[in-house]
Amino acid sequence: MAVATYVPAVRSAVSEAADRGGEFRPAWWLPGGHLQTIVPNTLRWRRGLSLRRQHLTLPDGDFVAVDWAPDPGGPIVVLLHGLGGGSGSAYARGLMRALHDRGFWACTMHFRGASGRPNRKPRSYHMGESEDPRYVLGELRRRHNARGLAAVGVSLGGSALLHSIATEGEGTGVDCAVAVSVPFSLHVAEQRLNRGFSRLYQRHILRQLRRQWRRKCDVLARRDMAEGLDGLRTFRQFDTRITAPLHGFRDVDDYYDRASSIGRIRYIRVPTLLISAENDPFMTPEGLPAPEHLSDCVILERHAQGGHVGFLESNGRSYLERRIPDYLLEQFRNG
Image 1 (tube, rainbow, N blue to C red):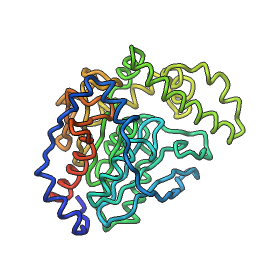
Image 2 (image 1 turned 90 degrees about the horizontal axis):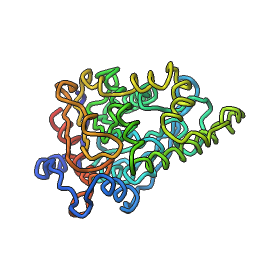
Image 3 (image 1 turned 30 degrees about the horizontal axis):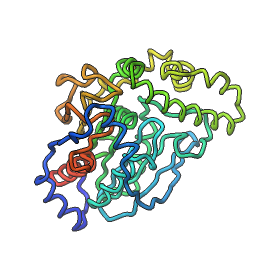
Image 4 (image 1 turned 180 degrees about the vertical axis):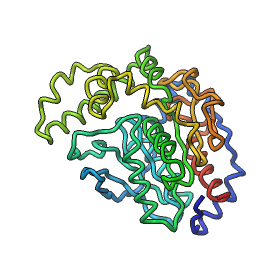
């Protein structure tokens, strides 16, 4: 593992990490997975940082946007957002600030089409996307090789991150990684999101995806590709019509099979922390990894509560904003 040159702020934070531990104390006043999902992500205000946007050109001529927080001098942490998310998402604002406050130089990599500016090519992003994250992480390692480099993926971003580091292993240049609320099995997630209240999350995200796709079709002067878009009411319909054929999958089931990360985790060779909740309304407990799915480098924190990218504690603070910097600091200290 590469060892970064640390500023004093990072050193002092390392010594404090062990004192706080990794115990999650869920807010008693948010019973159930839905409240733990909705309140932290829509009703909890978190002041963001002033961000600087950078565009990186990809090998095929397209681009991704990377939003950088101010540089306090420590290791770099790249955040990969969830489906329909970005640096403005509540969890991204909170994590970026928490990482910055602990001495990390944090940034959010926007997947193609998620930065608010339509991309040049039809290609978008999906649960098994590994090429663009690998390229960005490799570029950052090349440009800043004197620093440590970590990555944090949330939901879809976590799935893409696991595929990236499982495919390349240590070749990504990442020293350590964290993945939160990953839908490890897409068949399970698709079925869960078609039941009960979870259908509202699907409806909300699909509105964003349809809007992004329609804007892309306008830029590409291919309005024919947006025909019938409003009729796509489920993820399976959207993935059948757009995601699978656009990214070279045979059909939607081929996409769900190959993009599910549960079978890739055993190939990870860098220290990786997985944080999941059994009451995640995007998944079921049966869809979470078992011990035989994990490599020796992977730790799974399986919490009874926490929802989907929620994990709000009784004191009103975010467990993720405490636990993730602690874990990363521990890895760099031990590296």
